[in-house]
Length: 339
Image (cartoon, rainbow, N blue to C red):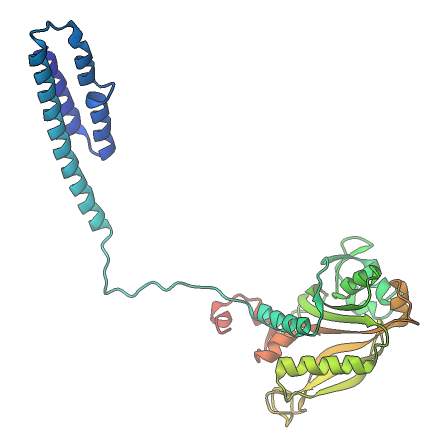
């Protein structure tokens, strides 16, 4: 029995010394000292030992266990000290080095401008409505009083998926879809991306964003349109901003107008920003054409309304005095971080 215990002790110490990580030391402890370990097996075999020899054998087992535990603890202490020193060497921090700056992103100029416009109109009781970017020709043109042979279609007759499906050229189809639902009155704005076959330059892109507004109710007049846009301009560009309406033509509104705002850079005195005129063109608008109301199932004898549309990029360019629209999409951090 003594020889067997010496053999177990020698084998355990050899395995302890061969261990290089704490997990292996734990495996040795389980193998020799655990409930199913080799020393435990020796104790279970005590029933076969003569009664007078049992105290002596028990003492030998306990001495073997104590010897193995001492070597285990010494090896664990040395190993943990070594691993800690290695970890400290690998994780040395030079407190004299400059700290790493966390590059935190922020909203794009377009997003900032859109949220500002939405805040203004939601404050006036409008709701924000979105629609599909891939649209039916019926909603994009026909229901907006632009039939197949209308000259206005030449400027927007662009990216077709099929004969009857087109990438929308304006967000007006969202207005047509809302009018079709027949839930009156309507006060809404429809922001979103649109597509036209424009050449890329400082003020044009084949993909850009529009915000179009629509109001349908009883007894709506051009005076309501003027008052709404005046409030919008003052909220967006400052309380001293003035508006000017110039006659224009849009197929889906009658009468129609383009709106200028007084130059907020020079106070309408004339500068490089407004090209010396004192005014800056900002959007188009008009009273909804009776035929558009009819095609969307609304009685033009009972209801009237107005609509307007403004380019989101144009607002961003004006508000932040950016002279090239392409800067908004080049993802140059040096430019974008200014906002």
